[in-house]
Image (cartoon, rainbow, N blue to C red; front, side):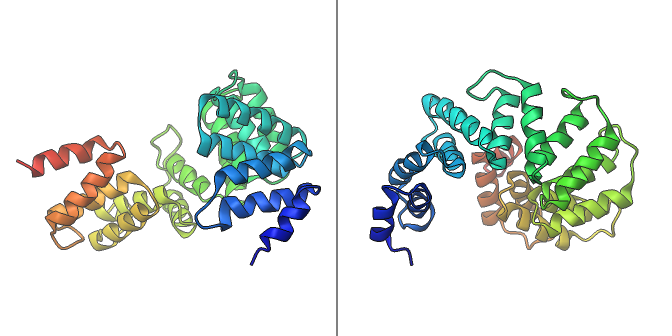
Length: 277
């Protein structure tokens, strides 16, 4: 259990203690106190602690989330990135790539991704793979994209497995390889990737490359929905509505459609409207 009083005394003169106190308020305390977390992250950040600078930037971007706070977040990401934080280098790269509260600069984004990737940062490797896949600031190259996705996956990013699976479906112009597509979907599922769970469910539902098993499909949709993928929530609703893979239950179907519709899935909105007729 954190001794908050002792930690607060040390935090006044010790940047590492200030960051630890901020993390207590940000993650451990119930209820959380993000204002206190911000205050102590600032103490550590201003003492040139790159990890605190990065965490302050994340808090400003994700939780304060005003135009001014997002601009300030980019400044702190830049300081932390210059101080060697791979997380900040990747976040700064994302901000530069999309022009989020700063001038868009894809070349600079690639430079920061590359620096973070040398430290083994999985998300940075994933973003470099995306750039090869799209031909954005890099020549479009399927072999290079596949190579970087594999590297990202090996560093523990299951989303990379889903990207590889999509490449091997042949839907993006690369040669179709059903065996490899299924292999990478299964790898993504093993890693808990929500989209891989859903896409593998679709394959079981349709019997695409696997023996049709709609009970298995519905179970995968449910796991994907629990992991936060709204399209899977909609598909699970169809299973309950139609009695495919799940016992027919219009109440549960409506619940799924309503949840998916609230997240912007238009098909779920239309399904609700049809059930109301």
